[in-house]
Length: 352
Image (tube, rainbow, N blue to C red; front, side, top):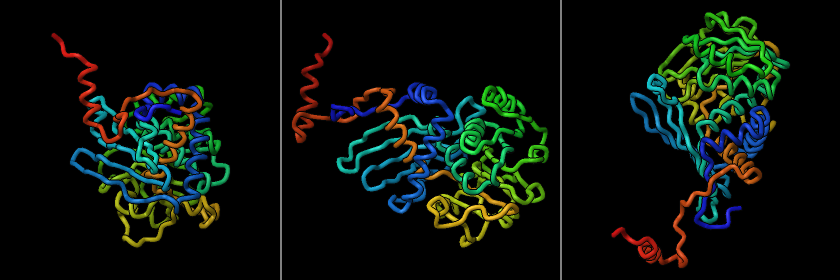
């Protein structure tokens, strides 16, 4: 507990890295996935709105808010694919958790690393319900910043231990191999998407370009596959040929947002999809047979960030891995904010 009303726990990038490593990456992903599943089961208790987006030619800046009536959370996040050419991250983020009763924030944290973790955890949660039973081999198309997180999450939750990697930049695949050394994977770096798809039971597409791309064509996708499509996440940005969508059972987070930003923006506005939360809550069926093609058309939703913020708040209370941030004005008399300002002048004498 933070005793002073003006103090907010702040989790810096350094503290987030220390927190994840102290817990262990795999354990962190498993426990985070449990928070996500728990919140998806109470989906109807949350405020829901498509994220508030400001689009430009170069990328997008978004706010992602939600509340369960007791706690409010939001994330600020950008997506700028050109950034990697300038030595910057494509995606950066920070988040806030606040008490609804007072409006006071109770957590401020980096979310660049945390978003990668929650995205991977959500993908693996979806695959628990949608992927072929006992799937062990995953193709990862696009080996950038998200790839290793996805791989470790699928191993931790589903036992996936064979990876087939492809990226147009082979150095990205080399980086992925290096970072995953010691995690127990059998890794094959492939020379084409077609080669990467050979023998795959799950395919994760995680490319970054802001364009209508065709990463997978219809002839590449055989029966029984689970597709984890996480690269398409804004209007005009897709990865899959529309014919693949028409052959698949499609599962989404929040349809009003996914129809704008996901792969299904290529389809009619009323094209039938299933909501993942209903599958997790037992209200809908996920995978029903071995030949079924399942597609998780993931764009990321605020409830997943809310889950991640809840999890981090709990962990820092136990580990103390945070800083105390003097963020809120706290005058002795709540109505005397101006007096507080004047008293600060007395306490801080001017230089002679």
